[in-house]
Image (cartoon, rainbow, N blue to C red; front, side, top):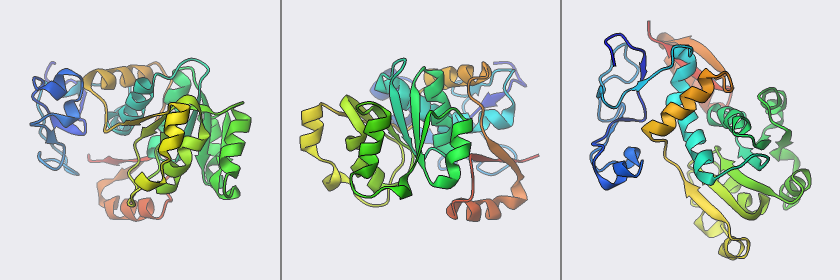
Length: 267
């Protein structure tokens, strides 16, 4: 790339590109990976360092602030959907649909031809629908098996994919009940509690379900997700804030007040 080109830095700042993991597209699990901000300088700074061979070129038609969340959140949801094998007309349930990951997941699922059931708090209803969600479900309105029954009703038999963006153990324990035969759960959100005992192995076997863990995407998947956004099919909903507001931003995040993403202006 030429000096002065617009580039993005991913969760993985550098990878060897030669180990077994890298060769199959698992660069974020490279045996000698360098994680952005942890092993490389530049987090919340005006300048940062990354490998030139591992930086990703940003399409000229994409605004830098809009592209920034796609380098991590965007590519993660896109990679999960792609690896799930979602097809035209499939139903995708997005848990945590109004958040930073979820609002991008709705749009990428729609861009891939899927229909979307968005799950979140009732206050996110209008926001999720403006992003293209076909159905919205306020999880607080359902007890017991009610949520699963409702999803099966609106999807006429269950969803093909459940994309868990929320860091909720309850969402993981409920997700198998949302799916149809040979459905797939995509694990992105990481709950603080263990959910292993809550998952029914009998249900996984009887319905032949799949569980996919996704850390983030490869260089190819980043390029693909940026190309989709450059075509206008995905647009990041963001607040552009100054670096001096960083502490306030974290407080708002913990309070659940952030809709979409916050991008820091370091200029």
